[in-house]
Image (cartoon, rainbow, N blue to C red; front, side, top):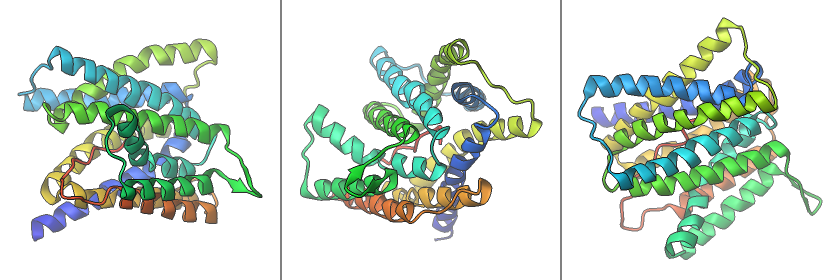
Length: 303
């Protein structure tokens, strides 16, 4: 019982940390250009993971088929996802970003149906419909007309890429454990991000803060929020189970709303609260256990 209590506390603290990471990322965008910020952050995460791998050893080399899946996870889960995520966060609120990203499990259900012909049950359809209503509330439905900001649109693309990457990760999880997948996909993703940062510098210029506080937050976010927290999360999942752990994911969007209010001074909107409740309710309904135990994948590393 005491062991479970420690696991619950660990999962809750990780969820709070990931929720706070949204406004912290938005704050960092005041001093860094989006792609450069993402690249530096993911590189520090990779450096941390490489050190961990060297200390623990015992990580085998992936097969050729696994490398292809890892490349897909790196392209969609890091390169495209992070580029659109930080670009979108530069033009929308952390609260909106967190609530739209929360729709990723629903998008994955649709993708599984389209790509793998997975049965689309009434429960999944109901959950998807409720979550979509929540997203429409978040990004704006008024007077019968639908409006979406440039920032929200970028976050939607980032969310879809995250969902696509989860399909690659789920395929990899059949032969590799989450620890190894996290290390390889993150390091591969950081390699892919470096040319993207160079392109950003050529096209729109690179903004680099000279503030020590900004750099401290950037490095801390890369190592703590993206590196250490991921291991804490996986450890908690292994102790209490995927289904129980998944409930803690629902904490993140509301932490992001509160943290954005106190850190950035963003207003707390009724549409965000109502939309968030609908999104999370839909995700809960669509992913209710049906006799099978599925692995809960680690949330987007860049958040």
